[in-house]
Length: 184
Picture 1 (cartoon, one colour):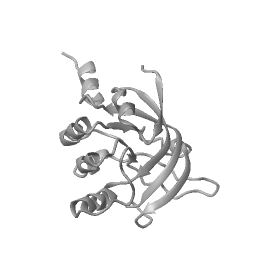
Picture 2: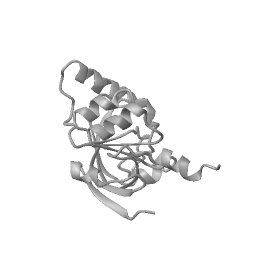
Picture 3: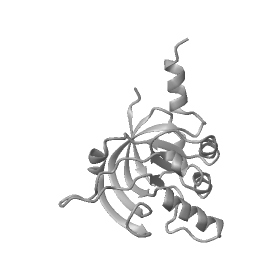
Picture 4: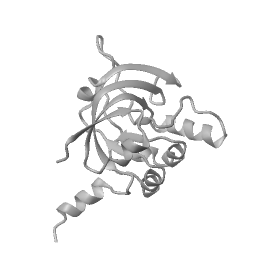
């Protein structure tokens, strides 16, 4: 098992180039949230030559919509959603400088190729641990779109735990894991 790597977001090219599949990472800093409907809006803005509601260069997007926030808490339960829902829109965001994504599940070949081409990284967060993950959110604000699944939030996180699944060299932890445990 790899040693724990601490990263400060936003990420640099050097940050993502040193990451390898299977690396366990703690992210501190700024992370944006956006799910499929927000991605469609961002994609449509780019398609129409319009500005995005935030500077996406070097940023990380977390595929999550929190549950309602309980009194005394900063953020609701924050488990990742299935990343394939964002696959159609993701290469265009990577081309504009997005450096990292956090979700769960496999990515399409087009996304994996774009991760390699534009030097980015795909992390997974542990599904089913949303209540624990929400404790890593120290501050949040809505920056675009109405409250709901399409909302884009700016989060300040501290030691947010993730695992590298797709790296800049085109490696895929899910593929390598299947090879490792394949029976002849």
